Length: 548
Image (cartoon, rainbow, N blue to C red; front, side, top):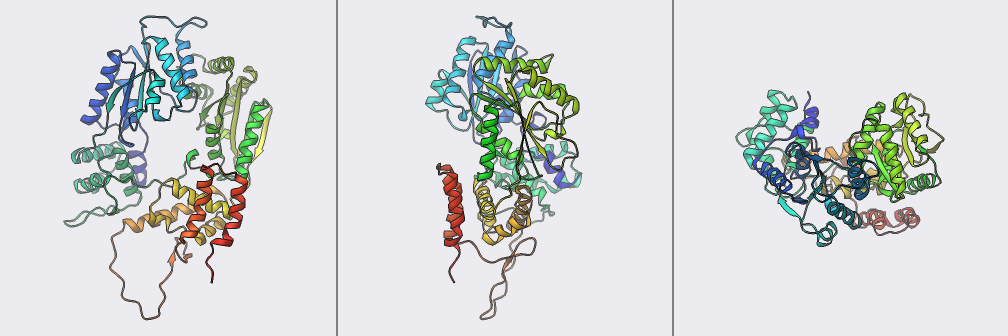
């Protein structure tokens, strides 16, 4: 396996139980949570900085609690949690009967990641359900800081707090790297090249934070900067980073990310049309367009935009048989498995409709749905009688025909990024992902214009090209500091910087240009209408170019 493949397997930023490397601090936190739940505590909070492993602890709970506890993991934002728990508890009781009072044979545990993002109405609903369940329902909340008084009051009172903030020691980092690399099938040579000296340097740069350690180790392997250590050699990572500072995330990664979405007029119009089609009762809406135009990102944004009465269930991987598909829908809703998952999804849509809701399944790459899955999905859409809807995306380049869904509404997404939109897109992503100054300096106006033309305005292709420039900029920061160049002759002009494709980067952006580029990103956050921002982006070049 290549270094890049090992990095993707060994240091993937996902809380997988199979990747867990035990350490005393995490084990102590697990014991504290399990002990609190077993003793009857109904609300437990695990608190600690980002990247410390709280999400992984929630995943490990299933194997640490007695058999009388059922752990149901819920994707935040898929459903209002109060409704979701009402469904989950309703499934455990016979249909039509009230929840039994007194002790229950089995206890439902709901781990909630990023619990500080709970809205007060949802938290209040959770608190009410916890009281109504009389011990049959217990919460485990993962939070970065201390829960606010308003959140605690909404949940129904105080919580038992478990703190996970102890960083990894240097020996723990060395063990962590060795175990992860071994599980990923890394060669003996690669494991040796990430030996004790490199582990010590990684420990210092990551500050003992597992999340940052994963990022640093992955970046190291992706950059192939694994020279054999010598007596005076140090790991070629940026010396300017302090142990407490986070390593930069990838602004141009291939993952569809709603948080990094940069609004533009055509995309907002499409989002608005999808909502209108759902509002008038369309059962299926299909968004098509060329590869890389941004359909997946728009689907992720739609999931965050659709509020009550819509409840969105995301299916990010569509190549599933009927049983797998509907099992995944139930899992995403936090509902327990059912013998007939398709019928259970329709039943949940019916019950959700009874409280004024509407279930929407969002399927990315719907063109890869198997034929039998499409047939079952179409049957479910019809059986639900309008209480279940579907929004899917398909690629124009797909070799298979558009899925045969009941009365689908087709929406095309073809508008590429304009030069002004490309600038707002690049600058917005660099800001959102907190790219270091060494990277931001490489993306001046001339470079962004070149990227927009070379990518034909396709966000996916622009990400690929911009990612190459980003990696070159990071690589320059990772490389050893070169010897200073000889003094230039009198009157000689400095050579221009060049991009990976050889295009000259004429200069760094001025303060005014930077401010103009930031304006769309900041303005949208302040609620300035898109039309005014579009007008400003059109007029901005008249003011930002330097005068001769």
